[in-house]
Length: 238
Image (cartoon, rainbow, N blue to C red):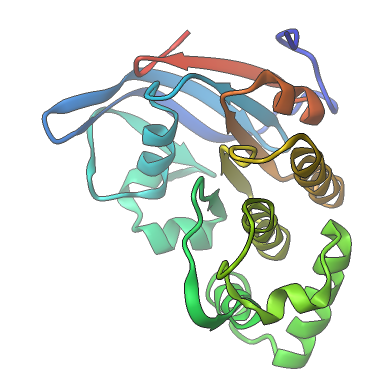
């Protein structure tokens, strides 16, 4: 068991995300009830819970999925009302989500996909030459070969490769807040270690980046040493 309060860096103080008394429904079912917590700039927060506990519901609410309807509460992100922002506006403001089950996009080279995303979210004026240099640096950082980005997005990727592709997106986009939804799911011990190390390298390069790590497993949290661990069950924080 990872002790609550175990820190991986100095305690952050500037609040980046503030969730206050958030209750959410999907159709007729309430999936979150009175959720309240903060994430500070540069903080790593673990969110632990079993299947169906509300972890992914919280993520999709933050990202603006239209099926998730707020019943009450407030979400402030970097001083702005997140719930008034469209999904693309949230991404441009610095909110990032890695998918639990990334989809395949046949015929779309991963490098071109990343280039389009970077231009949309970070810098529309960047040249292809400059982006290639940036992408080469990020591939080296997380330990993937340049040929990795020449393949179609997730097509034929193993489970570990799909998760590393998500982490490469994180490295390229450098968001203010990254929500990693069960990045360790479906991975064996070695692949989990590789992904965890890649995340650590990104955090070392971006000390102000905040991360919410969502998982079933305390072992993954132990590898990444979050500042705090929150537990969610039946739509409520413990």
